[in-house]
Image (cartoon, rainbow, N blue to C red; front, side, top):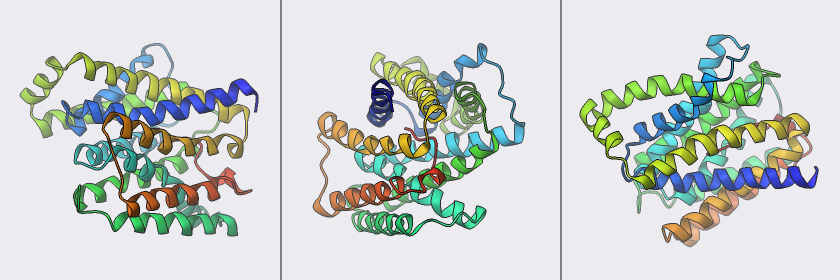
Length: 293
């Protein structure tokens, strides 16, 4: 990769890692549903200027509801109910494990021995993390969060149904499709008055966080990542995603004084190590081409 593109890949990983921290700050004032709805409503603004990608509506809806709505709503729920930001960033990246598993089950893409080893390592790390659940956050919050990488993996496979589509156009329209039901869900679930109160009394700090999440983390970062995947192989680009949980964990430790016990820290590092084994194997092209926060 060109040095400039390496810098772009690192920048995207840093943006996505910091987005976890921004989400945690915004959740002090917004419900998980409202945060997710605003994220995509802001991310959908470029739809005013870009055409709808030439992808059938059922495919667009399926991708949006898994890769965007499902992934980020469950992610926000987990963070909003006490799951540490650093741990969340690691759990979300375990989507690589589920993507390989789904590809093997549904598409008969058998993982290599090295990828199988990586899956086993990452699964062991998840089991270690499970052993720490119930102390500083609930089992329910962790269970909901675990759906985030599953939705992520399903969306990764569905993306194959939209080959050659401009990434920026696709991501903005996926945002629009996710934003509409999420806004309705926020009004119904949170109540019309609390929803309006949250929007009308939003602090400047949270507004800035939402603009960063919607315009920078969602629109800009996904566009840059798509450009890299257009110009280079997945094996060259995807390993940079390993930086995301490290950035998220480091930032959360600075901003929120977040610490991890020995077992949880060992589990997080084991998950990342397993993902690294999978991503760096010779058959990394079967892994996801889109990651984020």
